[in-house]
Image (cartoon, rainbow, N blue to C red; front, side):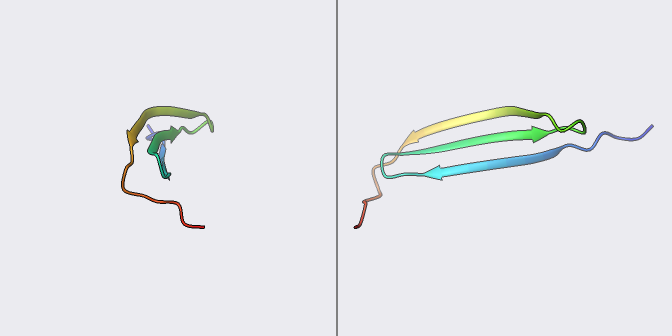
Length: 49
């Protein structure tokens, strides 16, 4: 029996007011399954123009 191949993806969005993350898996049929989401306030970044 062949083991199903799953690819894991992660995304991080660092902004001036918050940091967002998402983790997902792409299964062998090409479907994306979100397995985790996160959000946290960010007070250490300043926008420079």
